[in-house]
Figure (tube, rainbow, N blue to C red):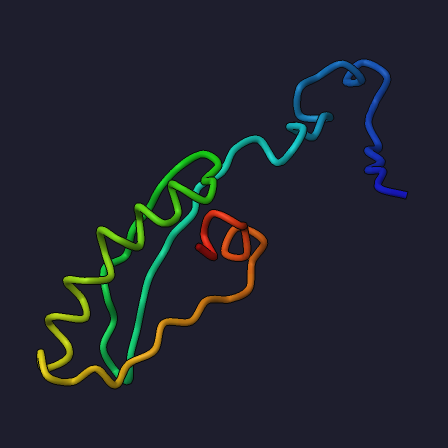
Amino acid sequence: KNRTFVRCLRSEADQPFNFVPKMQGGGGSISVWVCMVGGARGPLVIYSGKVDGPASVKIIEEALPSFIENKFESSNKNWMFSHDNAPLHRSKYTMK
């Protein structure tokens, strides 16, 4: 299970092309946040590393209001914010 076998000559056994590099935990993290409505897309926010509840709220607070102002008339309050139910979006901090 989860093994990779490589056939090679004995003289090639220690060559780098016989090894598959792996990093524990995936080796890094890049995430994106985007919003959309109808045919309109909001800003694409790219961030690296792990994001906790406060950082997630900050991203939304910085990106969402300008998108709403540009796509809806100021008198139109008929919009809804939803998320994909990821654990980060359900954290106690984020839900407050």
